[in-house]
Image 1 (cartoon, one colour):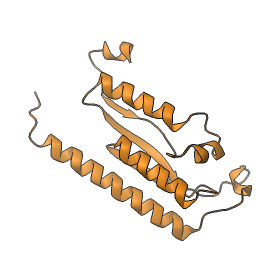
Image 2 (cartoon, rainbow, N blue to C red):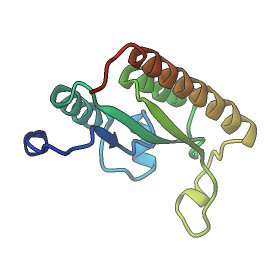
Image 3 (tube, helix red, strand yellow):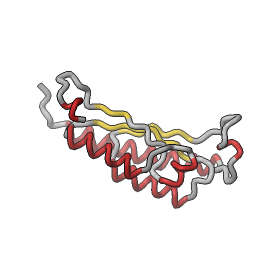
Length: 138
């Protein structure tokens, strides 16, 4: 971040692909990071660029994602307060470990979870735009 902060022509938009805000889901996804590490990166960016814009990708309905795990993701996303989130419903990919995992999530549950996160994303985006209304850009 120190090197980035010295660049004069640097766009302060960072896309950080989170996938899930729950460590146990991330582990099943075979991701090699934890939400605590992710949050530390977000804090570094925001401490360096007070005007940073953060976006992310989230997958809902990964096999085994319980209601509790989804709620952890939802609360983590509220805490991080991304400008925009790209929400994807998990879909089976032939030949992957996830294809054979137990506890596949129903399409109805994926739809409900997806809609809830899209609503949060839209709310975050609107709040950001409202804050920008009275700013003067030169």
